[in-house]
Image (cartoon, rainbow, N blue to C red; front, side, top):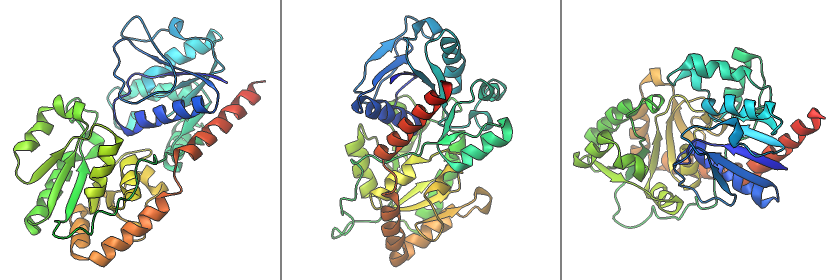
Length: 346
């Protein structure tokens, strides 16, 4: 197959990671994959396929090469992908890495894009049902995965180490992190620190976002936190392994990848229900999970700080359960579903 992925940016993040993984793995399977990006776009993932940059800051249908499939993703890539498809440059398939209308600006614009193509991939049953109810289209599920780089290094039993609670924070400026409930996260972590001052609180942020965010940089001066800015998966995996407890405060995620990665690295997960994390998280079985209105994030963290047996049991179960999710399986499902769509076109 010849595949074109129009992508706006490949900065470090769960959605961009999935695009990079699928593009690379489809390339390794022998397919001809091209990534199409606006001029001067940021690329922070290693890619096995070529990138075509457009002449301008936005994509045009004229930029698209001829392919069997065009795989759009974020809502602003959908219309131009459909125009290219209308020119005969490939069957348009949308990979919806999030359901934008519920939590991002310009929801009147993003809502209408779900009527553009019937060919839809989603990440979870939760996202599948939201789109089915709102638009009448039942997307095919392509689950998230975890890279082999993320594994348990068995660092937590070192003598004299302090217990570590960690969380990822993204750049709040711009309004694209509101669903992550980061102000609430910090408020709850402060409750934990007050109850257990001996616990270390680590805030993990992508280095590029940290460098451009005054709010993230302000955490460096707060003695309650230690800031970590991993440059790659090796460093991110290490920080997950430093963590006894990993906290996910997002209330709206189609896949919620960091919680799954932390599980794979042997951390006990404390999370807010975000929709997509029900694919792998079960409260009391492999994590502690609560709804935002229950306001018990700090309480769940403190429970695991005080109950080592429970913390280690949830961590062990979470690590084992996470093994069901890998990018090879995700790519295989993606590949088979694309073939089904192309066969149906004939």
